[in-house]
Length: 488
Ligand code: GLU
Image (cartoon, rainbow, N blue to C red; front, side):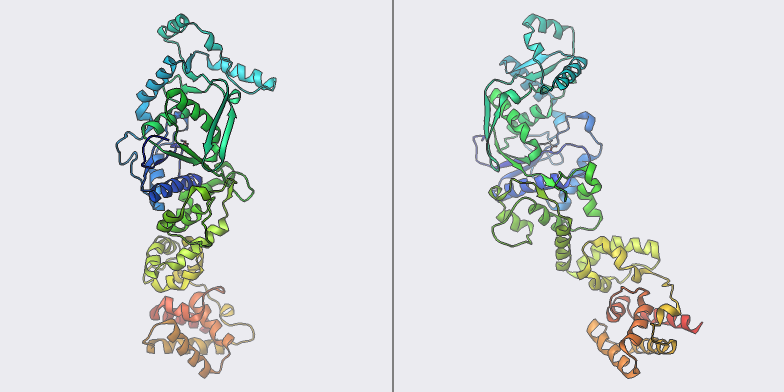
């Protein structure tokens, strides 16, 4: 670890598109680790692979993190003492260290053409040998190298992997020992002057004084190469913690190819998951608190999170569990706040069904406990937004009843509404029940027609909730429309 005490960690995404849920979990763990220890959390964009660059990624990655409530101290958008935080703006630095490695003979120039390297790889594949650079260019003399360089030949710079073993300790996985024979002479600097991930990552982690590298398990094979680089450069390596993979329900690594849009944080935002719920769920994706508390605010997570309770085994992304969290957080929201969050979904319903999204607070309160995502209002609130319920006498009058009974129920409900001054569910229930009892009709004969007249749907909330949500005027107008259907 670098000789200093302030904890400094980083999230180092590549700009290849949206924020991945696995990436969000990595960012979250880094953030929690830093905040718990008064450390600093840094964002660094690793954009040295020009072929995989997707324009607009940085903004989307940062806005995804912000939406989750994760904040950082230094980064591409806010600068900091080690700026720039975008690798493509630091190319000179990587070249400088690559040349330093050449000077100390820890690295060498390679002039092999892509064709030769492809041929070599194919030959190795056919004879079942591991794919490895054959060190052809290591035989070049100093003059030969000079001549090639002066002639402007394309070159890469490769790490000269020394013999022996590489040992390091991972905070989650313990001691890891790798036989250097299994490590290829990594390209550090590409022929286009860009560094590879390995060189840029090590140089930046060192220069940015990163104390702990907390990242996904998929980077574990790179760690031994990084350790070799730290040694070759004469630098102390940071601590490492490789987080377990995020798996889908088939226990395969969650991936864009297999799991589609379910891997993007943005998808969950669009479907109406609350950031607090997603954060809570992601925190538990591989980390176990000491007690059985399940709901954690970000502050509580900061207090409780520790790398020692992060598991080694892959963590399954269980969507049912996420829905459970989301429902729990939706239930906890003050109705007015939930109503605000639901407005975009309500406006969408207005656009398709016609009725304006006005006075929706009671509607929101009626739906609140049932929602597992905000987006579910698109199916659960249609009755509120429909301008035309398409009612028929057959729908309004239940089997075993009669249209006259239906008419009576509708008329009596309509007449009582204007007299109700206290518009709340309990009172509506008392008043409507009294009218129903006086009418001599059964529950089914009275309540079914009223519920159908108000919602047009068999699966709607009860009559009192419908009345409360729709309000007096709209309720009367719907009852009137239903009566007209019977009169036809
Ligand atoms: N740029 C790598 C990524 O896209 C970062 C890996 C690391 O954290 O070292 O995930």
